[in-house]
Length: 160
Length: 160
Image 1 (cartoon, chains in turn red, brown):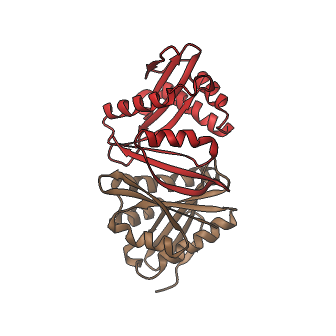
Image 2 (cartoon, rainbow over the protein chains, first blue to last red):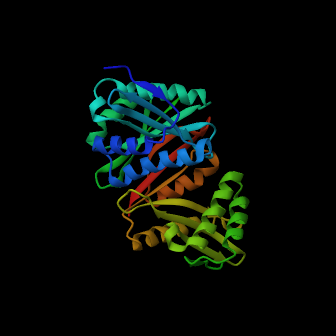
Image 3 (cartoon, chains in turn green, orange):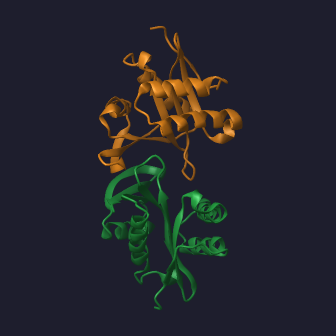
């Protein structure tokens, strides 16, 4: 593949590109898609004060993937990874791994001391959970049945 | 002690009473005290649409304790216990236990299927963690160093 270009600056068409990408993955609910778009719109409106940072990977077919992360209020430079998503067209080529490792570097540059991630225990998130562990995130617990019966929340974290 | 009276309706002086109580416990930071007051103010302003429910225990010396809880967005009737606090004057008399068990009953009446709680791993929260386990909440994980070095987040949950 053509090497993706990473950028942290938002563009006016990012909300729509994020909506398409997140919808195309097929693993997020309508509510979750709405949240992803809202975060991007809020960041465009309010700028840095919104507390959201992004990494966008632009590829030959438009947006290939993105992450959204930021400081957790009331903590000592702890960051949350709110979103990581890779377009189905760009999956299986190491883009998720590259995005996450660049995000860790970007968070470090923002003085982040630790990063936390939560995700579903469902099978369709297995690749995501594997990626977190591959990049040094420890599985620190599971909230059983958190989202609904049989769908729990898995929690990961690491020192940066 | 005189048996406390429980109520779920908010009163105009609750924000100030909550500020005094939460401050008096000595375990919450200034930021956290501000959050507690803000939640009560938001609930007074916006009513039920804010998504916060309360249980206040009025005793002979004013507010003896309170809980704040509500549905977690994007989940199937899962509730979060946002706050539980007991005034130092009312501590050691079983009020925390009574508040939590009444809160569980109130959440059930609101159709809650599961309840989740998180708290600090610090020693001054040991009594709180013991209380959760005594009332059937399982310790489901710990986010190590979540708040700051040596101060983690302990996660609890139970089916209602």
